[in-house]
Image (cartoon, rainbow, N blue to C red; front, side, top):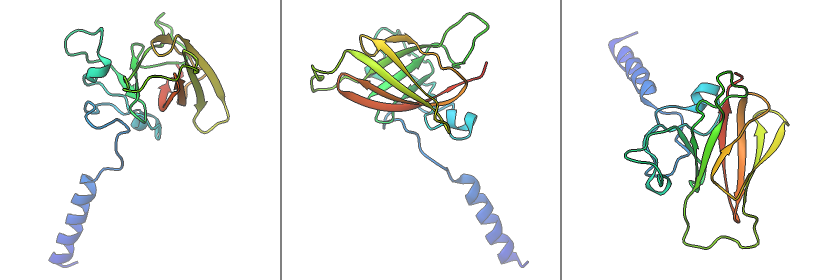
Amino acid sequence: MGSWGRLLLGSVVLLAGCTTTGRSAAPVGAPAITASASAATGGCGSRVETGSLPNWADAGFSGDARIPHVFGVKGDIVAVLFGYPLAQARDDGSSNKILWVPRRTTTSSDPTSPATLAITATLDGTDTRVTREVTGGPGPSIIDMPQGGCWHLELRWSGRTDAMDLVYADK
């Protein structure tokens, strides 16, 4: 191979190492991504953020609140993960505590819609589906899943919807 061929091959290798394979599902202006559920599970779509919570989700927190959290695909809700990493079973007595914080909207919520956060979770690659509810709408909760893996969550509350993936470890 001549010098031009080696130069071209070296350039291709360098460029291949600089490309990215995807973008975050987080909305514009979201904190930098420092951990990826996708990388940990080989395809789970939502990323765990560890930067500051967005201004609309940090009520009740003091200072620069840095806690693991996941944005909904639409950016209308964030799951603040107090029990991170989430696990199917825990030996240490802790729980899968999740604080659900919806983004405020300028439109009023649907008065005919129940004041409950309804969660339909499907285990990735299976037909396994479970439902969970957070009475009173988004807020504090303990959300357990029957087995570890990547769970796709469809979220419904006050006439609004969003979705995200959460990873639960086997133990």
